[in-house]
Length: 302
Image 1 (cartoon, rainbow, N blue to C red):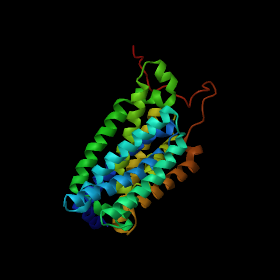
Image 2: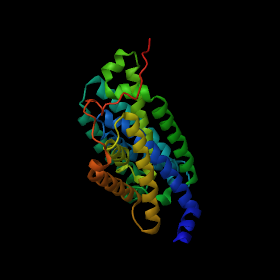
Image 3: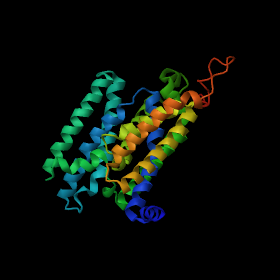
Image 4: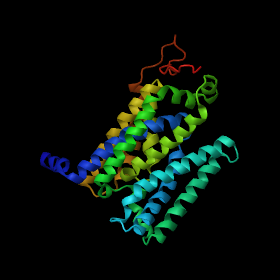
């Protein structure tokens, strides 16, 4: 058993995949905490579908430039398409011309259709997108690792560094505006961060399941945590655990990494739900607002 584990850790392919999984496990729940707070849990799904169009666009451009492999520009294409899609949906939502669910539906349908159409123009088939739809550790290259590191640093830097302002925005947008915070810019920032998180995560869990990795660890942490900060920290811990363990399982058993990670995350949520009465202490009768702990200080901007 130990020899097999040593072989797994010593494999360059698994080293790259585990590093990416570790970064994804940290970054995705950070972004997911804000999305859950804003009741935008499905935004990651919509952006994921748009990212698929970006992947196919990367194939098309890579083929036109004669690059090898053809998907060398898949991740950069996904980043660009995700950011454009996320910003557009935020602009549409802010202007109130289209309701949020309709805008998400447009992303869902347009993203899938655009991806299949462009991959056909690039000379591939819908099967060429399977690794991006459900994740594939065999597609993780050294370039992907560096791109993931860079994107994860940006997401974590913004998500943790701007936590007070983003918490105020997600908790009460009117309060954030009254406090003098740049609400419009912060809304766009949240959308861009969600887009980058999708791009970071698609190699491991796939664009169809990336939203689950952003949301399920947060939902699990909320069962036990009593503050925003504790929820985020717990979600990061759950995210890292399910990503690393799930990916390790796929080394020994020929399973889809994305599906394995998500099923494992849901299993952790289910077990936590069952054990919650034992793990969580009852609220003190003299503190009626124990579940709403003011652990984030928002400074007024003059």
